[in-house]
Image (cartoon, rainbow, N blue to C red; front, side, top):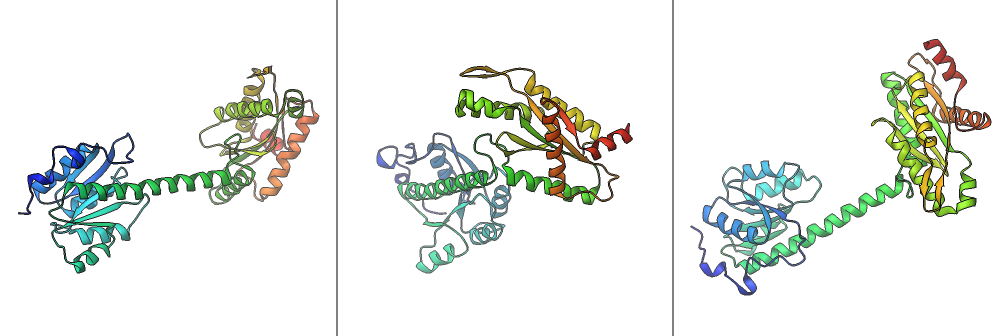
Length: 342
């Protein structure tokens, strides 16, 4: 049996396992302990519980591999080298060969202390190496190092997410930006080519928005844009898509939507804006919306491309503006398709 002494689990002082890991977050962190020696497993479990970790323990490599496949698998794993089923080296190698985000920090435990063994342990993918018997202070120091790596990785993932979001989302409204919503429309057009079905496209514009900016200033104008965005998004189906096309103009894609349903959906959007004035720090501001509609039906043998579809919706929007605003207008082809459907 591996030698373990009482002095390795001090009751207080600098080595007290009850002291929190430096830099640790208030929320409990998680660790997987894979150790076939019951006494050593209990020692490790005790230490990490005292350090406010949520601990998962397993007795062999196969159980460890299964635990690490779960969505909520701990980011930190303490793995014994010699285990039944799958040893620590094979487990490290398997984890790295099938690595999925987020990264798993692997600390290998072993009684082997030869330099060649250290190299052999690190090469398959272990991040760190600790020989048994070890002192709790050393384990804590290595855990701190692992947590710093994991914290840096979490910050990097957040930064990457923010960069991706900034690249395809509008910073003011949080909607898809012009480039992203057009790409999504192209994707829906491609899907329609493969599967058939109908597709609706709506171009919406806030009426007299320049007057809002000129009268109340751009900060109030921004507040109006945000509230219009909120109301529009709240009145769409879960699988509809909306983006800020430019300025006070929005592009909305309705997959699988017939002409009659498209008109109903667009009218719901128009009503959601006109029904109640928008509350701002400058007082209530009445706002209305004009909408231009176009659609593709399953029987359309030669559908237009993305550019032609956008042009058709824009022409319908222009007609709605010319017709008095606070209304919707359908493209001639869509109007004809709706009459045939009736």
